Amino acid sequence: MTTPLLSLQGLTKAYPGVVANDQVSFDIGEGEVHALLGENGAGKSTLVKMIYGLVKPDSGTMLLRGQPYAPAEPRAARADGIAMVFQHFSLFDALNVAENIALGMESPPPMGDLASRIREVSETYGLPLDPYRRVGDLSAGERQRVEIIRCLLQDPKLLIMDEPTSVLTPQEVDILFETLKKLRSEGTSILYISHKLEEIRTLCDHATILRLGKNVGECTPSETTARDMAEMMVGSALQTPERSGREFGPVALDVTGLSVPSPSEFGTALKNVHLTVRKGEILGIGGVAGNGQDELLGVLSGEILTDADAIRFNGQPIGKLGPTARRRLGVLTAPEERLGHAAAPDMSLTENALLTGSVRESLEKNGFLKWADTRIFAEKIIQAFDVRTPGPENAARSLSGGNLQKFVIGREVLQNPEVLVVNQPTWGVDAAAAAAIRQAILDLAAKGTAVVCISQDLDELMEISDSFAALNEGRLSAPRPTTGLTVEEIGLMMGGAHGMEVAHV
Image (cartoon, rainbow, N blue to C red):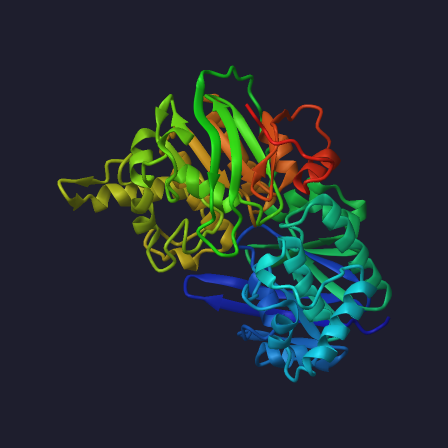
C-alpha cells in the first residue's frame, strides 16, 4: 500500500466541559478529495485547526508522508505544504488583490512579479483575477478566488476548504469544481468540509464522518445517498420538512420604491426595491453575497431608516421607526452575521436572549430586568432548537457556528413575530439542524406569519418559499412562483443575467 499524504492517529482535544475530538484517526491519500462530515459541534473545526497549526492536540500524532508532523503555528503548516481556505474570508477591502495576497506570504516578490504570477495561476486554474482590483469592489465569489489563489501560489500538497460554496451561484460552483478536479489530477489532496451533501457526492472520493467528536464511520460518497450520509452524521433518521397547505391572508409587509445608499463604502445601495408579503407567505430572496442583502435586512429591521411610507406593516408606515419600535409591532429580524450583529460574543446566552426578547417577552419592568424570566426564555430556546451548550450562562462565542445560528433563529421564532425577515437562516448548519430550522419557518408561516427569507442556498429557497425574487446590485427582480422554477433559472437571476426585470408589484 502507498503511504498516505496525511495520517491522523488518535487525535484528541478537550476544552472545559467538552471533548471536541476523541481519538480521531483517518488517512488522506495523495491526490484524493476527502470529505470531512459532521453535524454542528461534531469537532470538524477543531480537527482542521490542529492540522493547520492553530490548535495543539492534547494527545495523538500526525504523519505527513510518513514523517512526524506537528505544526506549532500556521506558518509551519504552510511551510510543510498545508494550505487552508477559511469559511470567513480574511481580506482587507481597501487593498487590492495583489496587496492582500502579499500579506499572506512569508517573503512576497516585487509587486509587479506577484501580479504577473497571480494572473498566470488564476487563468491556469480557471479562476481569472485582476491583481489590481480593489477587494472591496469584488463579488463574494471573486473574493473566494483571492483566497484560493493565495493558497495555490504556495503550491500546496494539501488544500483544506471549509464550506467553500456557501457564497457561490450554481455556475460559480461548477467553475470551482473544475478547478478542484484539475488540482486533484495534478496530485494535490483536498480536505473538503461542507454541509451540502449532494456536492460531496459529486466531488469527493472518500468521506469521514464525525459525531460528538468521534470518528463514527467512513463511506464512498458516490455510492451513498445524501440522506444516508446525513443520518450517519446525526445517528438517527432525518426528518424532512413538511409543507402544510396554507392560505395567504392580507398583505403584512409592503415595500414600495425603496432606494437607500449603503452605510458602508463597500456596500451596495438599494435601488427602487418593491416587494409585498402576505400573512402566511414565504418570500425567498436569492442573490450572491454583496448584492444588497445586508442593506435590505438593515432597512427592514429599522437599523437603516428611510421614508416612512417606503415600508408599511399592516398598512402602517414604519420606515422611520427603529428596531425596538418595530419589534413591539411584531416585525422581527435575524441578520446573517452571528457574532457581533445577531449576538454579542462575550455575553451569555441568557443576556443575548434579553437583547432582542425584552419587549415581546416582557423581560423588564419599570426599568428592572427580570433575569429569572430571561433565563427561562434562554433555556426554552436551547431546548426547542437543540442548541448544544453546557447551559444558558455560557458565552455566545463558546458555541460552534451552527449551534449559535440555531440559538439566534430560535430566539426570534419563539417570539411569534407577525413578520420575520431572516438572512441566511441555515448558513453553516448541518443537515438535521437545517431541516429543523426550515420546519420552524414553515410552521411560523402556517400560523400566519409573513416571512422574508434571504438566502444563498438555492435548495433551501426551493424547499420553503412560495415565491422567489433575486437581488442583484441592489435591484430586486419581479417575484415568481417557486413551483416550476429550475435551479439554473434561479442561478441566472442571481447573477443578473438575461436582463433581469426589476419588480413593480
